[in-house]
Length: 209
Image (cartoon, rainbow, N blue to C red; front, side, top):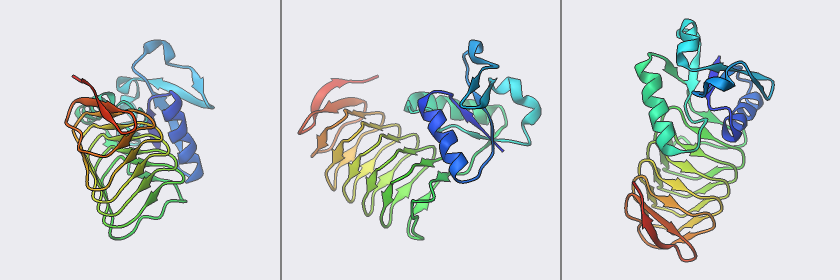
């Protein structure tokens, strides 16, 4: 049985994915106390981790139910510190995973994604709908890849980066840790860590915390 962090749009999409692959979800978690007890897409909001302490040995927690990489990392650390188990990687049945690919734990890989060969996806990564990931790519912990992203071969996306909807990343480039690529951008050169790049071609816009 699974419990999903976050009952917003992406959390509900993770619920949809679980229904498609036949995994039971018994509830959502949310830190906002006013949401506890509400029903979202026919599933209850159970509250925070303290509210389900009696289920610690019975459930696994999906931390990739939120898209914000910073929040995702914090929820991972909170879940670990509270002694809960992490959910296995969730993969839509339409997605072929080669024996030459390596997946970590807690990832969510959605419908229509194409992953070719010698790809490494580490932990707590979100690969949203219709993403194309080419040969020899490496995607590190907490990355979120929005719908419709195209990633060329030999690309490295470092920890905590956010790749905006419909953007494209040229082959042999590197996206720095905790950087953001704006939606619809074309990245043709390396992106430093903690920066926002956007546009066609993608250009530096500002530094990020």
